[in-house]
Image (cartoon, rainbow, N blue to C red; front, side):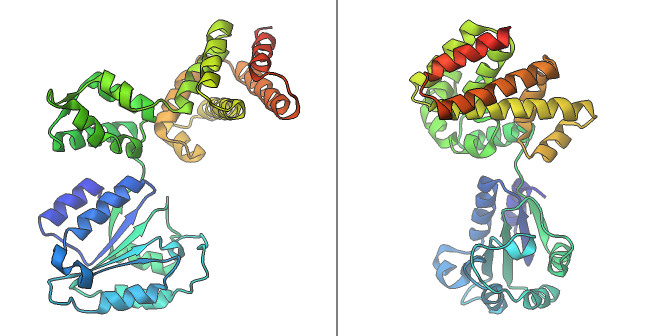
Length: 338
């Protein structure tokens, strides 16, 4: 089940006693939490809503709260945030958790309590008895990062709820400027909706004026210029980045990272990995994989390696000499051209 389906079920009054919200997309985690909080009337929230951070509070406290009856209300909501003991990770604090007590509660959950685990992780440790029990009992809601297609659809729905449309070209521009990150796009919806009045349609100019291009996005164009040996375009783009007060070390580090990704994509794609498989293996957003594959297919592995090693040398020179960053980059382009 995704967060949208969860919201619909809760709105219709179909509520289960235990939920697991699993995934690293913070905006989806927040949307799920808000949907649960709406189950309890505002005047009852103080007495019937409890939220506990597992890095600071023992899970036994949350379990005790979950076992209590609602105070002059229909239901009690208990939110367990960052339950790291469900994973192989170690918490930041030194809190001791009574996991056996939690397993006992899950065997017979309180019918008037909604117990919600907000787990901002890629996955849980399926070998643990408490995880096996939780997955058996709880309704699992997927809050993992959305791929490009799902993110586009979700953003269009958000604009529809705001009473405005977004032009196809404007949506393309929003996706490009945010690298299809649903969290970044979602954060701009209300601002763009306000800009759209009175026409009630978001335009590409409004997106370009409000949403800044990321360093990765600017460097993406620079990478293409480098690979095409287009010295004029590459130097002009590099100069623009310097003029925008971007640190030369940051520019070079991002270039090195981009070329490392292109090499990894080139090698792994030749071994038959799919786009989704590449994103999982490299832990990179699917949209970056999509753009990276498009670039990597146009150039040989030798060309990618030459650019990568040249940029590693530039990084060393930036850290050990007082030469102009633009001069070092120009020399890099000259060597690459030969």
